[in-house]
Image (cartoon, rainbow, N blue to C red; front, side):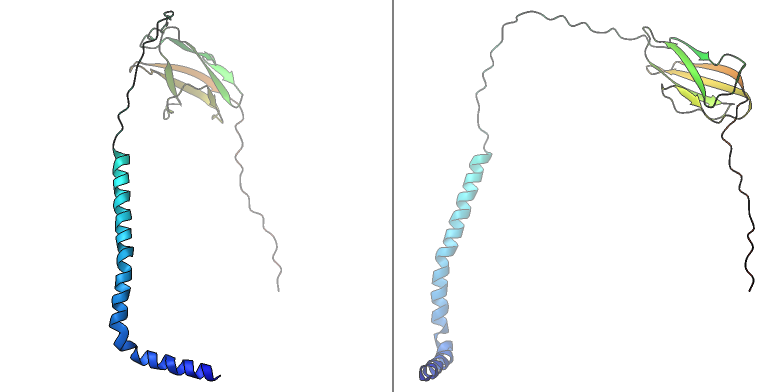
Length: 190
């Protein structure tokens, strides 16, 4: 216990005298940090020099030797297609046919031959034309009565257009639209 008291007194005395020894301690600490700073600066400079060497392009020697031709290969290229529209018609339904099927399928017969591809757009009863594509056409839920079907055919190469018209009569049943009805339920009276 006595040694603790002695150490405690010694510590108090050292703490009181610390302010007189503080400049010496700071000088000693500054001397110790100089080698650390020099080491950091040298390492950074060495890393920068190493990066400069990596970024320099290396000159590579490329030797190209010509291979002896064994056989000449004949490549047959397809001739360019004719601009315009080939033979096209609406094969089904026929003019003034009476149809009941839902959907009504429109068959388009196109013999491309040497001509370039075509796309088509259609409308019903002078309505708005659909977008152009080359897919088959199926018409759902047509109104009963006379139907005027217009097919507008366009070449994908130039602006050639051709319009085909087919009239037919539709007397099928379209999908019924549900009619809402109200039901009254009695409410309990209090």
